[in-house]
Image (cartoon, rainbow, N blue to C red; front, side):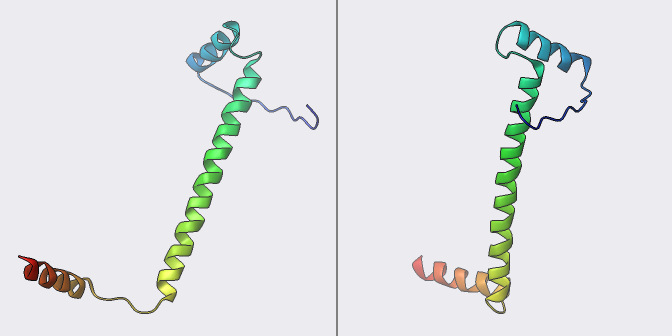
Amino acid sequence: MANVERITVTVSTDMAATLRHTVEDGEYATTSEIVREALREWARKRDNELRDLEVLRAAIKEGLDSGSGIPAEDVFAELRARFAKKD
């Protein structure tokens, strides 16, 4: 692995035991491998959340830029009138 930087991470005793057992069971070669995979998953999740946030911000901006809104009371009054005609 080129350009590797060592950092120290402190985990609970239980978590450390889980990491060691996972390596001992042969699921991973090292505890570092487990942590790297967890960090990759965290980064993917974070990237997805940031993309979703940008989409939400764009939708809010589009709504604000579209002009003045309609009071909720007017919208509900119109809906009530429409549904009253159907009965």
